[in-house]
Image (cartoon, rainbow, N blue to C red; front, side, top):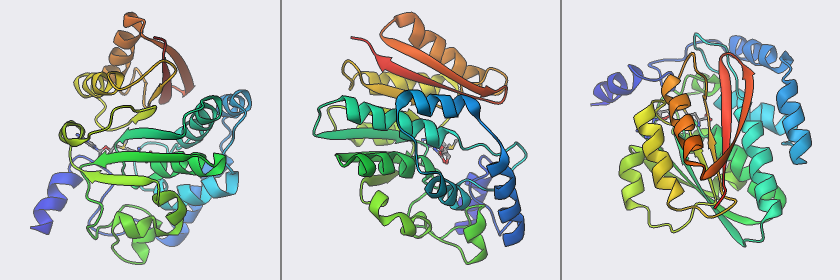
Amino acid sequence: MINRFYNKLKKRFSYITYRPLATREEYLALHEDCKLEKFSVIDKFEESSGFKIDRDYFENLALHTQICIKKSRLNYQHGRILYATLSKYIHDNSCNSVNIIETGTARGFSSICMSKAINDIGKKGLIHTCDIIPHNKNIYWNCIDDLDSKKTRKELLSYWENEVKNIRFYEGKSKTIFKNLEIERFHFAFLDAVHNYKEVISEFNYVRNKQKKGDIIVFDDVTVNLFPGVVKAIEEVKKKKEYSIKHIEISEQRGYAIAQKLL
Ligand SMILES: C[S@@+](CC[C@H](N)C(=O)[O-])C[C@H]1O[C@@H](n2cnc3c(N)ncnc32)[C@H](O)[C@@H]1O
């Protein structure tokens, strides 16, 4: 049973593995290497938004939820973008509480960054995040914590209990989860599950019907070389003129789009 579960998920994602893939020293060295990289575009973005996630907090979270073994270069700058964008949104809006939807929880990194923004600004908020990877199953996550033992996501994130309090974790495909969520408005969304046109546009259409003027959707991996379907979806959103789109490109391998509802 567990083997079938592993085979199904492992074929498609680098988020779960059969065994620890590196030593503690190797994970730490990878992290040190990532920390050396400079991202002036993101520095400027934070400056212009007026909000910036605490660097030590961010890097500690990244060590446990982003530093993994994969072929492409590691990059977790979307966490800084989410924190800054959501903080500004909450700061500029008078709503008492914010509802957030995320597709693609993975190890929980992006949800924790958004929850930290809610806590730091001192407002109420709830993040609804979904993934086909279960929350309460003991697995290896392809991260440094695997060296202790298999863990559930709940255990992996136990250090961030103040942030986890604002998060509801759902297991399943976004389409299925959406059908059962009875929430009228999503002030903020982060779409980061399946990176093809059909899935992204379908998730966008679900969220847009639950947004008002000024509400925001952040798209990850808007990168023509790697994910042309995501780029096509953003082009379509742009054509409808219902959202303004801000592109952030940090390399040929990684770009983001921030859509803000105009009407
Ligand atoms: C790029 S990762 C998300 C990364 C995460 N947001 C972060 O910042 O660490 C994509 C995730 O989407 C999940 N996923 C794949 N298909 C999905 C679906 N149909 N619905 C929801 N999640 C899905 C994968 O299991 C994977 O964990």
